[in-house]
Image (cartoon, rainbow, N blue to C red):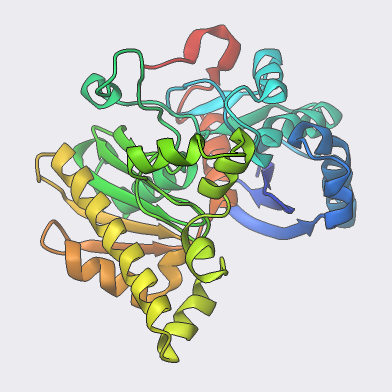
Amino acid sequence: MSLILCVNPGATSTKVGLFEGTTPRQARTLRHPDPELARHPRAADQLGLRLEAVRAFLAEAGVGRGELSAVAGRGGLLRPLASGTYRVDAALLADAARAERGEHASNLGGPIAAAVAGEHGCPAFVVDPVSVDELAPVARLTGLAGVERQSLAHALNIKAVARRHARDRGRPLESLRLVAAHLGSGVSMAAIEGGRMVDVVNPQDEGPMSPDRSGGMPATALVEMCFAPGAERSTVRRRLFGDGGLWSHLGTRDLGEALARADGGDERARLVLETMAYQIAKAVADMAAVLRGKVDAVLLTGGMAHAPWLVAEVRNRVAWIAPVEVYPGEDELLALAEGAWRVLSGEEPVRTYGGGDQGQP
């Protein structure tokens, strides 16, 4: 059986997993101390410390050089891509290092995979990066010429959950119309038709609030915020993307804590939570309209899908659209293994990043 290492870098940790094909063998979350990360504020500069942690994990797991069949890393904020599994090449590494579409720890998935794969003589992949772009032309334009909507979403988890739902139903994914909602630290969604994410909710620009992101904001209020005395690009961006959502209203990014406060009689906490659920349901309905209301299922996934109260609130508002199915958590290591295995087993061809497979399909 092929031994696959999967690597998912996050803000303060790197999740790693060993799989025999798609069967989990061992997994761990490698924590990176704040002082270490503070010395390397750019994600690209953290490559060395994260790589050493991954090597230590492999040594402890007893994996010798040459024993891996593939390494799969989470793809970051790369150029717009068709969905699929991509071989990590020089062009991908260069784009990840430049981080022209934004700094994010996921930009290190490809570089870490390439470094470890080079030591084992095996291929390195990224699977369904954040920048998967399958938008229909009508979903791309905005009301201002020259300004287009960007397809940035939790594509890895959304695509994996859609595939699992199709398998559960014994149907090809291409035959289903689905609304998939990833409820995590950011909330992103996709309308899936013909196996493609024909429209998305991009949590950097639009959609519901989440634990630390504001979601969509009134345009006039945003203009005033940007031009307020002393306003700087970095501080405004941080307010929207990191210090928004539950944190802005309640001073916590922890959904469990917010729910406990609401249960304890905190009416402000209850209102904020109800508003977040309300906004999530509105966004689901938007995606259903993309599919002309012909929706086979609404899929709720991500870490917040573990919260029964939130799931129930969203279900109560959207169950009229289609059956609501819940796939809680973010099993992105398994999704990476599945993507690598589809290539290794010949189920689908590997895509090339620098060789013409990238770009809007």
